[in-house]
Image (tube, rainbow, N blue to C red; front, side):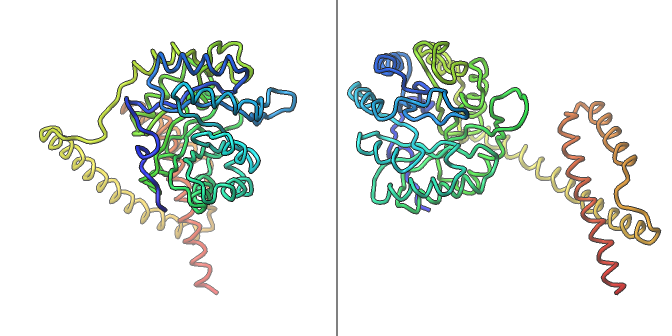
Length: 363
């Protein structure tokens, strides 16, 4: 897959790369005043505004439609590039007709390969950048599939947007970050720029700064943060929008860390620490190998004596004692419980395999 460098289509004057604007374009004055203030208070790379708003329930604000595209033309006259979400072929055709600079495909669309393909078909032969948000649920293959469909249409100016994942029930975040998913995306497509959307992850303006800093610490290429001249009066997602002034202050407080190390002393120290980790990991893997051998023996013993694989009391004992030991050693109890769960699932799988193998041999 050929992907053009981000600098080819979105030059960055200052770090971090910033995409901002209101969740939804509501009025001409709201859009233009937000754009003017963002230009004044931030180093904005791209002005965003939702023209069509996919809402969960009917009778909510669903955007102003094509009228808002005319407002984006006026934003361009201020010297800013623009971007908006397209959810189907008609949206895409209208956005292209009105000269929007960059398109993005939203999470509710990414989840539907038919909709993504409709958009990709419209984009054949069109030289326009496209950003693709992750699907609502943590499905890396769907995310990759949407990126591939757009790339197959000939689009080379591509980026991904990490906006978190929906989980049922109340959580700290509106959408859980699940940082491991965009990290895995980067292992598949290392050349693909990834931009983080702290607004949709957070759902609350007071959490945006910490999410934004985490994204930069993980090496993401930029931030998409929603901004509104009167956030509390916004017609959609009021709690997660910042005033342009507040956004400028937030951006100024973010720490930009280096993605590479040039100082020879720092390189030597970093290499020594990495070598230590490599040695520890080798010890862990050798220990896991010995553990597997013991589990295989246990499976065989249980088979020979008619003992079922899963033993509830033993599993509860493992969780209790390992969690207590973790706390004693100053380790995260939650992390160790997750690790125990993975080890237990593998133990069940190995013992089941041992029993089935012995059954096959006895036929």
